Length: 475
Picture: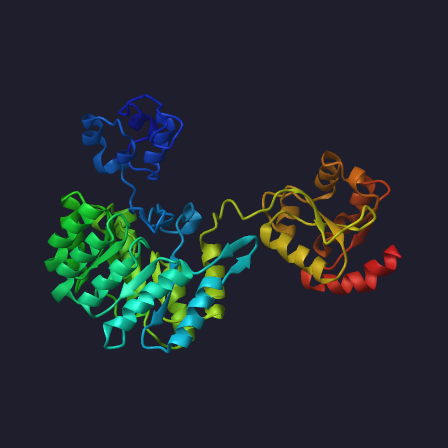
């Protein structure tokens, strides 16, 4: 039976030392009850507490930290569907490069990966990791590319090679990058990964374990050098049995590579594993997932990557750099990993767009980020300088906020008064969204002296409105 926060608090040391990251023991207990923290984070927990709480305090899906500063987090999820609460740690996207490509082409690709950014509603994204794959027969090209990719992009790497010696040498060359080592074959996995773990000691890398026969030496290397292990096996029974064996030995920083032959099977297995971890509390399934997509039709690859984002992927390796594909996936990822109970929103205030004077017109919209950035962008594109008033609407869109009573004549007038808008601007021209044209009369009564103009319903029509209506009205 799950324990409540108050029940857990009684077993904690009651010191309120804050060393766990929470302000009080009660706050930490509440996190434990919600599966957002681990008992091991308390440095003074008693053996009795460990015995009583045990796995009851462990999150259903283990959080694994990767990268030089451990800022790349995967796992740590607590729900099956995002509307139940929210998803926390977005699927990490890696882009693959092959050592068989021409050096000039590789240089261009690495530069594009390094420089690529995608900004949407105030958030900027970039490629999380670079995957380096050996396809040329000679190892030197793979090693040089691994070192070059780390040096030129500054991204952690996913190193993939059929040659254990090349993979071990690459791990040494990119020491300090805290990269992911992926060994494709079980026959040489143990010596390869044990050597690689030693060479990147302290790097917090992921060592890919391809089968049970390699588990023991890899576990020893991971313990000694503080790494995570990515497990693989021929079937799910063998994979989960291996995970349980390592868990029984006290090692929890694991990733799972599921034996799926196609996207359909992958969706099914991802869902089964997630449900088993959350609904059945089956601990061997409670680890983040790693998936590398093969080359194929771009649309099919995008669809497969999208399913990883939608259905519980931890790391997804894309086969090539495609900015259109990345923009699509980052947009999807942002939507899926935004708290559905707390939409992305901007600070409520009066925003200057361009270089507005006190006589510039004033537009008003809600503080939903997507609405703000689209509207502000279209106003700037129209070539005028203006003010954009953004009242508090709890991150709702225009129509939603209006229906909820958060965006009406009274709330807008109150925002103007509280922010002393009339002291900052001399203009008395206010443009409201076309979708709430019905509040124009009430707004004129609430803001005496202001001329209320009903703008277009769609932001894309703002430029035309500025030229055909606003310019004529303000001249």
